[in-house]
Length: 158
Image 1 (cartoon, one colour):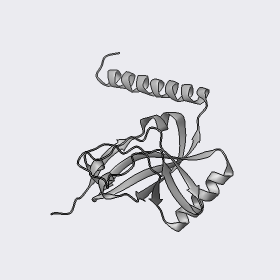
Image 2 (cartoon, one colour; image 1 turned 30 degrees about the vertical axis):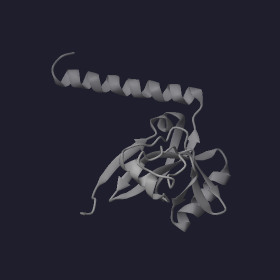
Image 3 (cartoon, rainbow, N blue to C red; image 1 turned 60 degrees about the vertical axis):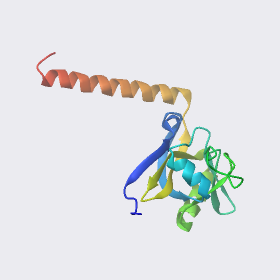
């Protein structure tokens, strides 16, 4: 069997970019069991309630839902078990310092296959308040209107 190349997205957490201000991102591997990988190859996962924590010098992904593999037997996995994230020691130490600072969370943004291995993009994020969300939406709408006006001007229609 040929080695897989490239990147194939399994799941994204679109709500995270709405609810959080992304400060920094990290790519981490995930420690999985066989039936979890088979279920992920079918494109089945949900990052909606997922978050990451740092405990005893290790980073753990909690709340990630990977449904049981349909053809799995008694060796099937538990859908919402805690999974270990694989990061370099320096990155873990940096995350420990930043999360202890206060007000910062570790939020998974996306899960994907990269060259046949499952990776998770984890972000160091600060929660947005309601008025911040409104400002972001207003800015995006204004930018969209500006680009539309520029397009109309370029085509000669005002």
